[in-house]
Length: 215
Image: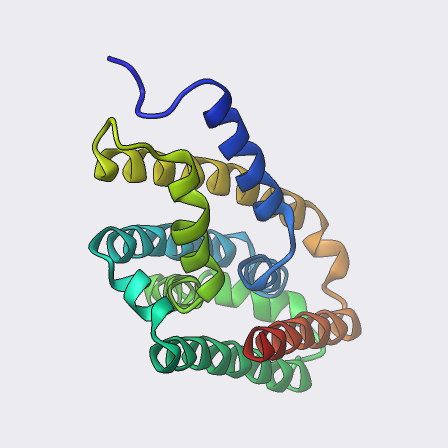
């Protein structure tokens, strides 16, 4: 059975997706922040949430909902505004957390890692919500995916195939990033360094939200 998309088109698609994945954005900043501040399990939950949200974007795109939103200035502004507000909330929460960082940051972050599924669901929800409300992800599904699809095969099967390829690349990239974070994290858990990391990553999230809002 032949693949929905293969050959040069598939390699071209993968190259474009790779360039998008390695470009710093809200998702990467969130995963990096969670991994450094709360450990690799928190970052893994973030990535699981981001991955799950990709299927939401695929369904919205397949049903035409995302296209309707992009063609309606008021709906687009509302969707973009919700995403920016959520990123700002995460940024301000991170800044507040930086001020409360205790002297023994290592004990605090290790305790958070061991706090159970409730915390895990919270990190999953952050990843899921951040990406669901990310208008840039919607644009990927609406502007890039169609360039690699044709009328000869089922559009749904092609969309699903491209989504799975994208997810496989996303998981691979974030696995490498989380492995790096895991190796360097213990060297960065001095309380002052933690405050600086939290403030820096939170500031980046805030700047990302403002840039998204102004686009």
